[in-house]
Length: 530
Image (cartoon, rainbow, N blue to C red; front, top):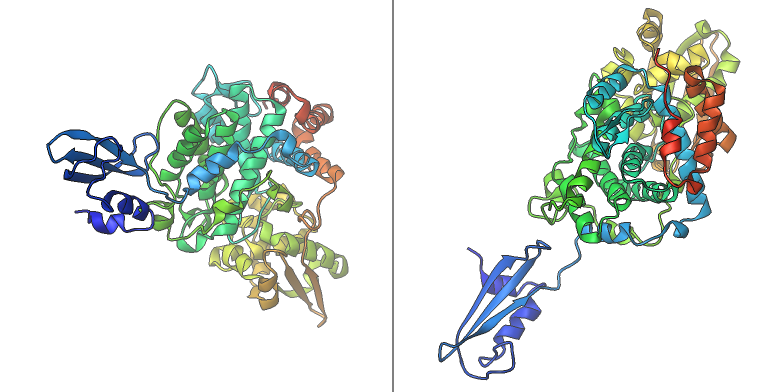
């Protein structure tokens, strides 16, 4: 049973309580001033906003019913409402030139990753499943001419963008790969005929939301995967592209949040295909949530602060993250592009190992290797036994000892280093027996501003070679040049579609802000079936 007096004395309702109790002659209308026979007060929920309200019935002493007064408390704006209001608060013209340019770079980078991984097994599986469905107002599955429902297209395309573990990164309390959002934004943009400028603004919004959530709280320590935040960021990006009003956008967030929690088991133990497609599923949920909200579906609220909401159930506090959403998005400028196709915490170790190889020469001279790393790196990719004997590609590209060792042995890190014949080779496993990973306090203190690793190589002749890298190539503080982003794209795409078509895709991406829609870019992505 609700204790109304206690409820009325809470900060939210105290002004209301004083208003209805200070006078026995109060009736709320100012027309009749007779003694009250009965003052009925009860709590209900406002249907449209799902906010708690007080209903006060006034019955006079002569049993004349005067009327009903609805009083809404002065409650703190929920995070979902803050996000909904923010999503439509800025225009494309408010974005800085640097942000617009960076979005184009990430589109090029993501499309390169997607086409490069197009023939990989989980990407083929996702494409096959999505291709079983068609939609009148759908979106094109990348590399094909088939239009599926936009949520399924977001999943199929998201699998391709992410699978090589080669797309961009943001490191904070919770790490992320924010270009994962692009599959959802691109699918929604095509389905509604959005312009290139509208797509760019939506992508910038998605980066802003996911990165600021990552700054607010880590969820992996409690067993939840970082892709959980992606359901919110993609829902907001799609809601903006669909031009939903703030109320429907809020419900898109609510719907996305009620079933978004993803288990961290996707990234521990023996890794599976799902490691590379988990965010694609979050993107699918984000698009679907926006579609439902557009049609009028409402979602539970308050989704973040509620009694059984996001914060309570996941055991985290997002603090005042809602207050961070002011002005035009800019968080994309703090994210980093990968130069090598491996988990980001290993990037500086790869660079260090490749530098040392010049002095080592023949890997047979190596007696042992020690990698000193920061806590996040050790916890995520450098502590489980499976990392020293990778059985799958997914484990290999998330193994600090393997990645660093194979960089030293082969003198390169490409997709070839993640073929089973390479990562499961007996000689490689034998080499890994002499590779150690150790925590380093100073490096941990620098994280996430720096993503540092120190690699020591002990040679058979007694010498020790050491190399430290704090900001690997592609890091926000050591960014790739535009020409290097293009080179990465061409290396991934040209073998499949040739130089001429690859250059056309890049040219279209650089002019994305001038495009009336994304149709020409989508058509340019068709792959030649083998």
